[in-house]
Length: 327
Ligand code: NAD
Ligand code: UDP
Image (tube, rainbow, N blue to C red):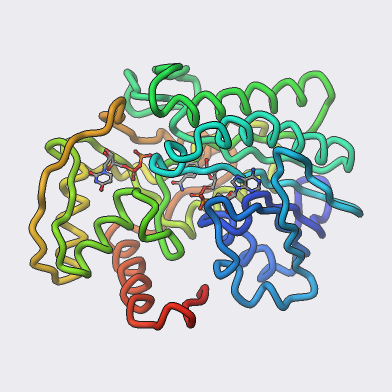
């Protein structure tokens, strides 16, 4: 893989056994790049890595990156994704989330600095909190509750952005920050609590689809292949970011639930449940910068992405649990 000033031969992916990280590992190996994945399996799973586990150009290091990133040999690029990401996960692991955002990011930055690698931070639209500006562009500073239930994640990522910037400006580390918006697709965990896998699982099982509040809050959902392409475009470019990576097609959560129910040909009822505290009302990326600086834009529309994702969940639910492997 070609970076902006060098060939990228060996990449470290922290959080590589998770949803987005595993897609990145598979994509990088398809491009012929050697991959070292560091993951402690807090919210990830080895099955996501599938055939990579037998690939001599792929190494899995089971390690907590908050304690260290012990990678020997040359590294050209560090993709730092390790962190719980779903609201249910970071509510369950609040201290771990803060620790990996701080100590984990420090260790991943140190690895990049000492090896001379480019460093990419997978930040999040959550740095905008419950936004007062819509759509969100990178120059918006956000509206975040520093002590609310989402703060362990939002503030960890804001700190990680500050730390990455300090390494860049003080030590000269070659860093880039991407702010990922809601991403969905195969390999999401059906029990991770996020809207899309929850709705698909409920619709396929014919169980009530749990829409929070009146379902009028919005999200902008980006299909995994587009997010992976955006991350790699940022990683191989020279722009320091932050750069929004997301799909600007905005829809209400009720609309999302209805589309999923239709795709699943399900007669499951929609039920309205309590809205989580500090749940953002709106979210839509302004991707002008990604378009101009990276030449990137998403290409999979929401209905196509839902079809692909539902097919994956449906085929998986037909397999015995021991045979469930990554695709
Ligand atoms: P995920 O939970 O599926 O993956 C996270 C991975 O990090 C897991 O494999 C987990 O085991 C690993 N991990 C967590 N703490 C670790 C630690 N201390 N040491 C080593 N490994 C650790 O989540 P995801 O959806 O794939 O998200 C990946 C990254 O992308 C996260 O940093 C998240 O903040 C960011 N992001 C995701 C989304 C999204 O919509 N999925 C949106 C914005 C940002
Ligand atoms: N949501 C919902 N039902 C669920 C899970 C989530 O209506 O079973 C809502 C949630 O309240 C939020 C939206 O869907 O408004 C997106 O939630 P998700 O956890 O997927 O992502 P995030 O809040 O991090 O954007």
